[in-house]
Length: 249
Image (tube, rainbow, N blue to C red):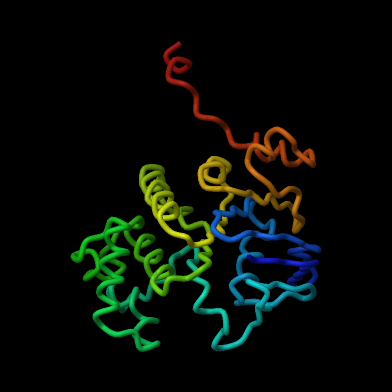
């Protein structure tokens, strides 16, 4: 379980997060939803331990998250940035197995885990032998996902993993991720600004606005029982796709 209590974070004079108190239970997919600049990525980075709060506490299974190198909770957390963060001079396989090699995982165990995850993510050995520049955007994101999952983390943090993809690739990767999440016992925290994506993935959704948590609950809760006017405003802000019959008329 991840718990944040009265967490505040400020960059220079701008308050990015204000008194955030939140509990994210294990074995569920939690979505951090909101417009750009609302504090979603900052909140994810606080959980990952890459930055520290100005005040308040962040704990994972009762242990405080601290910014140290090496991070004592690193083995429990897999973190995938929006850009994927692949090293361009390493092949996909070398990117994926980098930390396993650093930590001394036996080669046969590396290959077994690589086979498991590449099959799960829909990547072939040929894909894994290529460099990031030789892969499509969707394939690079799948490689980054495999890397985040490789050490069998208890918690998987994903920062807008599909933001840079075209609609077809985005839908394909959404389907792949949903299948992966359903087959694992990993707790997922996913950042997005897309309402449909939040509804598709989220067991719980946390809607942030100007550094504040406006509402935390299921998508149905947000739609049917909004606790703030901005909740309804945000959910209705994305223009729906017209029905084919409307276009023909």
